[in-house]
Length: 256
Ligand SMILES: NC(=O)c1ccc[n+]([C@@H]2O[C@H](COP(=O)([O-])OP(=O)(O)OC[C@H]3O[C@@H](n4cnc5c(N)ncnc54)[C@H](O)[C@@H]3O)[C@@H](O)[C@H]2O)c1
Picture: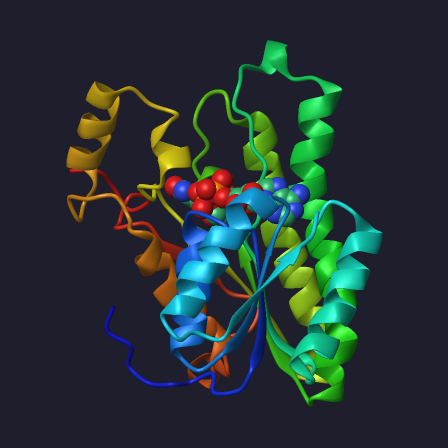
């Protein structure tokens, strides 16, 4: 990984869903830029080895087991982060997701409630808990992970697309409300990233066809998304507010 600068020196950063996939790359990138990273995840089993690996590379990362679907758990964890690092949170990356894809007829209450609790309501709780800390330090940056599914949904993605569309609305509304506090709120919109979870949705032939059709000829790498998040988190993104940054290799522009 080539890191342009240590743009986040000493800044306390919270990354949710940081035990695997894109969240790990974001935690790694923010820490490599000097950030002091609180890696949150609901799965202690997955989080512990991930944090150990990042720390073994000399990165300032601490793990926090937290179910972002619980308002109380989020409030408690945000307070523990400030206490643990001895400084208020300056960057919050809402990355955690719980998703199940299925046809309209298969949608049930459990899938809707869990999807929205982790992917949408949680952003209200994390933003609500982080904002006072950011205010105390004179500002901050919140980056929310949406998806191209919010812009160009595919079949069997009604719940996920609705959740990710909600993330975009929440991002803009929070940007307007928190601007007076010098808190920036932006969204990154990833296209298909080659994580195990995303690849598991398709068979090998479909995957190969989709990858070949990408304008840039490949799926995204978690590091591609982490780079965009780091830009928005840092002062390089100081005048970017309420924006949607599409990072999809050109997929929403057109296919080859
Ligand atoms: N992978 C892709 O192709 C892709 C594409 C577009 C958008 N995205 C978005 O990027 C983000 C990361 O995607 P990913 O593929 O790395 O996901 P992933 O499923 O690999 O990882 C999600 C992480 O969130 C954690 N998590 C789940 N429920 C949680 C909860 N209640 N509290 C705390 N943590 C919880 C999981 O344990 C897991 O570690 C998501 O918001 C996703 O929607 C991904």
